[in-house]
Image 1 (tube, rainbow, N blue to C red):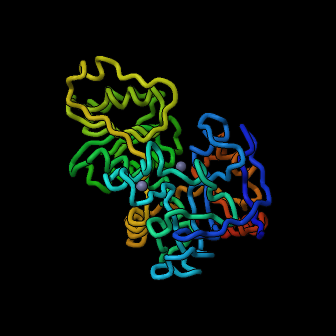
Image 2 (cartoon, helix red, strand yellow):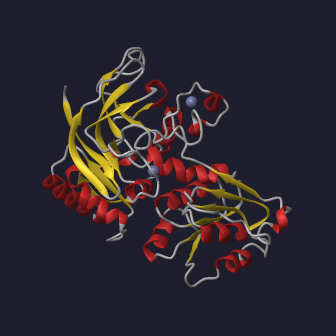
Image 3 (tube, rainbow, N blue to C red):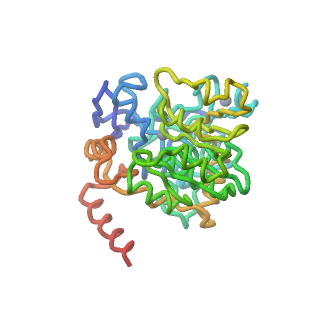
Length: 371
Ligand SMILES: [Zn+2]
Ligand SMILES: [Zn+2]
């Protein structure tokens, strides 16, 4: 049996690079050779033991790659060698939930999230893609891996915050937390036509990046009374839509207090423990507010749409990639990302690269950016 290198979750705080069997596709499945992937905040929850997955699983749910092998029944649409991305969420397209439009809940709650959750993920040289016809999205040759690396999860999730919130032209929107997903939610609010977009985050560099991603202004929850400021900006009403992109009781509650009566709280955060909506913030349950939650939309058509936005220069996610590593250096990459050191937003991981190549390439990129 052929082998491959992969990063395996062996238990809480144990990520181990191992030689494991290379997957082989059955009918309707594909195997892609991973050329780039990344680490998500959700992976940190898993490694810390805050979201349980089985030990022995390969983590990672953000794949960019090349089709290496196709199972039966796919060669009318795909060819070995095609460059592809696959959404973090891989719906089957055929079950009750898929037919009812809840693709991310394919088969049951959170069921569309398979990579690095219920099946092996992208932190490896090769990845088995289930339901390949519904999930392989072709990448045009003029786009680089880094230009599409944020699409499988971060961009799809963040932008969906604005879509689920039904942001309309001329709306006022506040986005709580400006990490990678919050920044994409800010971008999504701008794309949907919001007039006022306020990015809320305690970290100065993230507030700066929020301006770059479309925020009209930013607030620092450490020094600003966020609810009062947002009311002042909206004739004392509150914003039309608040997007929660952190997953904490305090940001959820502030977001709820920030929306006007009849407004929308669009929640992207991953919560743990008990989430409380206080009586006064909910106007006793009679405020006509809507609270909507969204798991990252996946599937090939979602990816096609996001790729089109990159290709037509409507969005550019490359500023989110602040650090690059060979997959061999996942320990360093994980350490940097999980403790949010050195202004990191997202790290790019390259399975085929040697660590010294990354150092050289990084230097070249920095030089280009300054020109
Ligand atoms: Zn993720
Ligand atoms: Zn399904």
